[in-house]
Amino acid sequence: MSTTRRVVIEPLTRVEGHGKVTIRLDAAGEVENARLHVVEFRGFERFIQGRPYWEIPVAVQRLCGICPVSHHLAAAKAMDGIVGVDELTPTAEKIRRLMHYGQIFQSHALHFFYLSSPDLLFGFDADPAVRNVIGVAGAYPELARQGILMRKYGQEIIEATAGKRVHGTGAIPGGVNRSLTDTERRRFAAEVPRQKQWAMEAVAIARDYTLENLAFAGEFAAFPSNHLGLVQADGTFDLYDGVLRAVNAGGEKILDDVDTSRYADVLVEEVRSWSYMKFPFLREFGPDRGWYRVGPLARLAVCDRIGTPAAEAARADFSEAMGGLPGTMSLAYHWARMIETLSAIEEIERLLDDPDIEGADLVRRGQRRNRAVGVIEAPRGTLFHDYVVADDDTVMRANLIVSTTSNNEPMNRAVESVARKFLVGTEITEGLLNHVEVAIRAYDPCLSCATHALGRMPLVVEVQDAAGNTVGEGRRGS
Amino acid sequence: MSTTTAQKSIRRSPNERVLVLCWGNPGRRDDGIGPCLADRLKAHHLEGVTVESAYQLQIEHANQVAESDLVVFVDAAASGPSPFIARPLGPLGKPAFSTHALEPGTVLALAHELYGADPKAILLGVRGYEFDEFDEHLSPRAERNLDAAEHWLAAALKSDPS
Image (cartoon, rainbow over all chains, first blue to last red; front, top):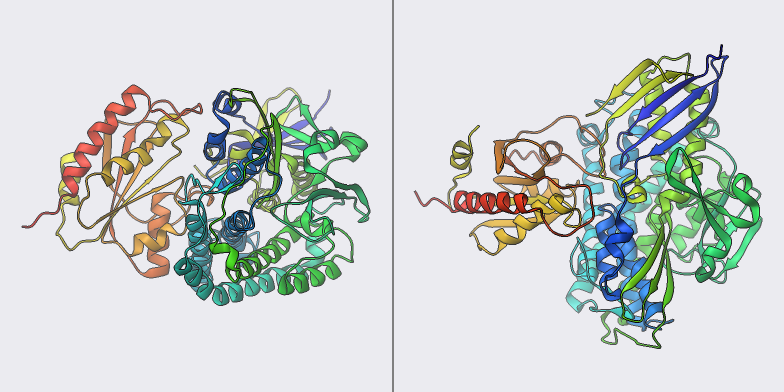
């Protein structure tokens, strides 16, 4: 008689959305595999279809409360193509970049100071009652206040460039509808030195943690992978625009700077019966060898350099610690994320010193097209928006690949790696729950965005035998 | 606590700084009750009352909360009495779930931990019914509940010169 059992963890604490983890045990009680399941909410395509194309950059922000700006900009980039604009005015591009860097800055700060810092500061095994945002506020109030002010700064930049923090309207097909006033520019510029200093300190915290725990990080949810992201044509790091590049675990280019409009030629989204979230992979290499990571770790792996000095120095330091190869450690996402935060504030500084940011030439128009693709590097990774617009100006079809979907396979592997290491018997220990949480959180997933689900966050661990009978359970959260 | 009692606890002096913090996703039907109430309340131009609308409660709201004497948190309620329920709220020491989105009690706890602020707080839960599809319209029943909540809150927030 088979004694295969399954451990079910659902849903995840402190990651967004509604998902569960199942760990299947073999007859010997060893981990056979681990799967991250996601409950999908359907209907977003229907919500989009039939709407006039110019409404889309605002409407898509309904998708997600975590990174609406990324959806706003990806959709706007696609709609640039629909109105036949391949190159924005200098002011329009710079305003959009400023908005995007503000979004990256505040999103990464939120994740680091409030989601991951409790793990790093208190240790993975600390009591969850302490290892949380309130615990950080009590034990490290200055750090917590910095996090709030970094987040606030990014949000204020979004408000100034998008019109408002929620459901901004700043990016429109072919350009933007506002630029910065001189007062706004001066106000934001005056704040840069302090924000940059905090970003540098955050890089140091993440760096020191990784280096001091290198042996552990090298075993915790660590595995080689392909990496995918946007880079400029010369290989420079770019979060707003560029060509698609992928590298393998050895750092060799396996997707050689492909135009983003051709994404469907090089990527395939696989459906698996047990998950609503798809599994994208590089077509040329198939599902087994073609899956890839996205997000901060991947972006540092695919780029040749960062175009701002402090972030480039930090990248070189990071690359050296990784042995000059693409990162394998899920925990290294935290360090990479803070390097991107530093890059974002340096880019903000540069833009605030550019007179174009106050310009008045905001919109271009070209020859109307029926299909266009917009791709951007969202905080969590590469985000694809693909639209077909009918001659009557309404959207006929939309396809979105969100960052968390691309990280689906890596997150599954991370959970499996942790389960193999920390699951003993069928007992659902706090240690196991903590480590599963930490592994998934490294990817900063936004499951509500990936699946269009309302987020609910209790954590339930269930052990099932081969017949599906529950033989053990652990629970955390509401 | 009855809504009448809650209304009395909201009653304030003209100098009190009031923050009404409404949240939800207007693209998911009745989840948008909070932002809808914010839009309506702004039209009342209540003196000394700041009305904010957000997708989700977040850490930066602790800053705003700390600068207020009274905070009214407004959210859609997926269960409970209709048209709405109002009850006092205190700091919650342990986040119930994701910090991608905070509970109002956690925002109060952050305001206390980081800024030593303990404003009076009320949670107003307006009953909604339809949350599971993308649509920018409230259900008819939620609309009626919103009408009642707007009427009640606007009356409660008028400053009491006595």
